[in-house]
Image (cartoon, rainbow over all chains, first blue to last red):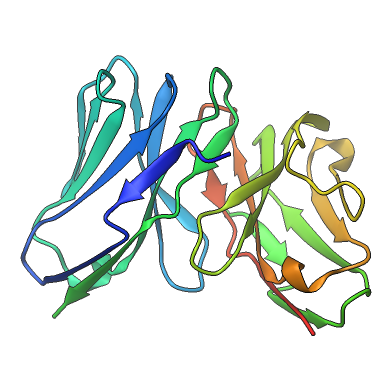
Amino acid sequence: SQQGEEDPQALSIQEGENATMNCSYKTSINNLQWYRQNSGRGLVHLILIRSNEREKHSGRLRVTLDTSKKSSSLLITASRAADTASYFCATPRGGSYIPTFGRGTSLIVHP
Amino acid sequence: EAGVAQSPRYKIIEKRQSVAFWCNPISGHATLYWYQQILGQGPKLLIQFQNNGVVDDSQLPKDRFSAERLKGVDSTLKIQPAKLEDSAVYLCASSLGSDQPQHFGDGTRLSIL
């Protein structure tokens, strides 16, 4: 069963703009991960944030986690055409380390 | 370091035939995952191994799917017999541990005619 769900399903922006996508989940987690998938390729790990962390940065990526609201957000600043991809959050199935993925956010960045 | 290797890259078979996929994880990674990804959806975990033991296979259709990880390294996933609804990309991933980032192969795209 799905644990995490991304929102919006699709996002279209211009190069240079910021992109924000959200992930909501249902049960308590020990960590949450964000992945990127380019068309026809496997997923690439972006950031892992643990339940005792509120914010994490990696280059142009910023991830926040609000355990009280059971939600996380991924912000991509100053987007580039190369950021065009699907973005997924992965959360452990309730009380376990077994990962579940949402349906993803499809991001298109227009040059 | 070398990434996760999967083969074949593409496979086309007729329904009721059998097919096998192979995965070579990153050296030293104890945890290995097989996922099914249907077009437009996120990956769905089929089976998770820790070394050569099964951690979870609750979403594996065991009447037709089987997987093994001999010697805790390479793994194969088999479908026998295939159904039309098995058309998907089959992704293999590995990680140092079950709460660590996963590294994915590029998958096998399976088409059932």
